[in-house]
Length: 554
Ligand SMILES: [Ca+2]
Ligand SMILES: [Ca+2]
Image (cartoon, rainbow, N blue to C red; front, side):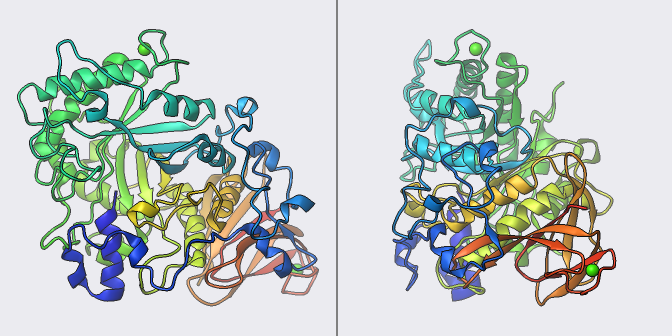
């Protein structure tokens, strides 16, 4: 996905920019990790000895459904496994999901990237138990796989798609199906046999290609609309279709905004002909206009505005959702005209301000890739579990707090989905951003994701905290009350909160590389943890670099 992008960030920060011109070599991260060993994934069970007696540890029983798990804040005796035992945190492949078909409703924007290869239901079960709603699929729907030969009438082979979609939908997960993988009979420079499986991402320029694409997309949307006509077995429903990925990249649709607009018109029309509830998601934009490790601009800065300017017709701009990607390690490259406060939300504001005309800015928006790795080549600051776990909290908090950000008077009307890249470790691509390893064993980040998803479920943004030195966001909680999510970017700050009892959850990493876990305490006015020491109607807590979630009990 962002193979070169991520690798080159590392180069920029740690090794110098010269290494970044390398097109494909050296990107397999297994050789670039130095002393970092990933063969023994850390397990949450190793935290026991570090646990103060008075605290409780978040260790949801993920073999159960998410809702059931929320009732259990303390680990069961069997859950305190040794690091070498995985039996308590790896669900059985036969675990029933029938009773939890809709657990995700109420998790408005929590999503993960799923990758087609080696996928199996263990990962879907884990995703569901983590509170995931959205699953952005990559390598599931490749046009060249479904229609390898151009025939009349068309012959489509859905065998590689049906099963996975059915299993996702059966768990209440909402797929965002990324469509790509042009066959070479339809595309000259953007087709699959270019030696990389992510190719097939470029203009459909051969005669009849766009008409064939329309036919393919219409058949796809018809197959997954659940209307009883030409449906896949089990009639699973897909309503979100994304067309290509980081197509603003050099070598993809770079400089081809008009061609992308022509494709999008066919795609949008085909989706909506078949499925009136269908939504066309703009292909996730890398949109890093100052990235130059390709020997020039790596990404077409004006791609989105060019597409919009080239879409004409009654349903222009022929997409329903704006979409971009964000990696915090690239924030130093931001253009000066983007927001000074840099995070996953404000990049979206920069995009809206820079590329989207005012009449389209109320469109829903997604960020279908963001993350911070937990390991990787030498970088400053180094990749580690602490940084990755912190960023899980920060990124989803920012997204949930999107109404609290504006830039040049531009605001985001509805942040629809945020996709952590990736769910399963993508070790074969050199990415160390996964929440679970290739044996379906969770990393620390999995539990942090689960904790944040649960704590912010049903929450709605109220206000920013407004305490100097602290980045804090206050949410209204469904059923009444408030929750605060806060952290500092250095040092510890005292924060006084009105009330007489708080529930306090702290992310705690005992070393930079873990173990990382969550501690829960109840703090009473004047009691342990109230650092003002008085019964005065206020509870003073200490906020440091590790994010803290505080719920006002009374
Ligand atoms: Ca149908
Ligand atoms: Ca007090």
